[in-house]
Image (cartoon, rainbow, N blue to C red; front, side, top):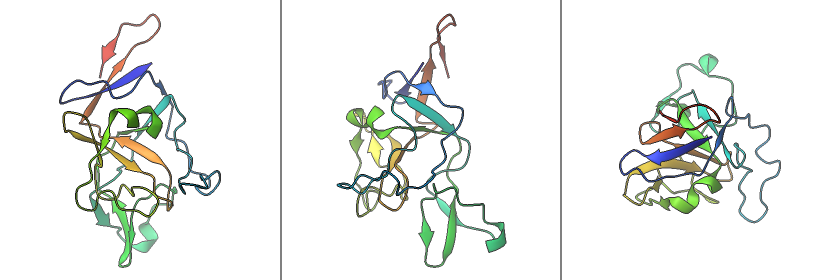
Length: 170
């Protein structure tokens, strides 16, 4: 079991979560979409987390050549009229179910980091903050893509506790 904490103030951000071996694939974001909010089902099930080894979130950079674009995973955040952009954000963000952390975090709505017709796009950087003010999570839940909440890899830390194993921070 793992609990994630704010690096700045030490507040517990989640309850006990179980690690997944990888971030689940997004099969069809429209399958199971909530009719009222337009949001897709969360990529990660409640009570679990996964580490995303790929760059994720802002900032974005233009993709190299069209033939060099990575295959679409359904988890991209931003495409522009001038071409496809790719994330130049940090690797190893912690992807969790939004309901596992949202009661403990508050929206940080500054500028356009919360824009989207059905929810935040996540394309403009962290949009959720700890009570201490640390902007440490990005929630992407607009109707255009998957429903994911990413904890910043340098703004949170994990405490792992196992059955017979000694508790270890990481």
